[in-house]
Image (cartoon, rainbow, N blue to C red; front, side, top):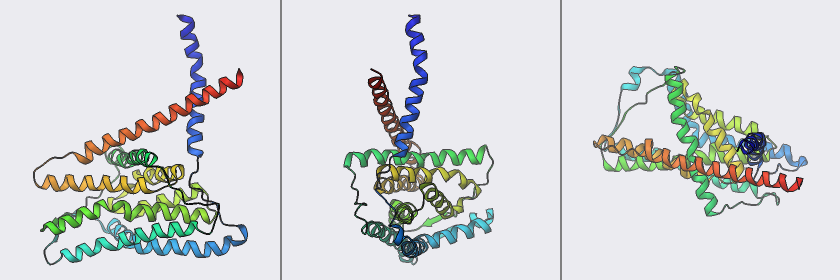
Length: 315
């Protein structure tokens, strides 16, 4: 009995080392197949690709970034308390504000595809349905972490948090438009703030850590209307860059982002009708825990395979 316990204790360092190696190997996998352009074409590529990224970011997210910065610099509790009413006369204008970001999100997807075409060693990667479903649950983890880290920043670190301006919708059409806008949030943001930035900069021979830094700055600037506490969201774009590099597709992140924001919108809508749905605070976190289980299974499996390989090498 004591011998078995001693063997188990002695095996702990090797298990920890195997698990650390498994995590390192998982993080080192690059399935984007993105290679920098040839050295003799690097400068022309940068002069073409970087302005393209800037234009699409400016057109797709520029208004949102400007409004977020303006709100961040001019916020007072009095301005936040005033409600914006979307009446019958304003609903079409409100609907048209939803369309341009979606259009430029789609254009960013097209640009991502075109940026891969000149290089035969950068094929279009299509992940399997199984991998996509698993990655969807994993992609929910950073979004749920956002809420927990935001609460930590507010309650423990005492970072200031800005309350948003209430939006009053007076027609079913306006409410439906709002639902579409929330559901399409992933299509508006992920192709631009994640996909285009990663593909374009990687083709320009920019390192993955630098790409992650750009993605973090871009994402946080777009959400500055939450106030200084928004720094707690820096982990979200960082993990999304790592996940994109690991699986080679942004589709799971687009879907996860849309589902998370739609759950928040539905909770708000049902709450206004005196119904508590708990989609964003129970259902989505439960799905994120499925993602955690998937990550654990992948790491454990790779750890076991690594230990078996070590034992086979010693035998």
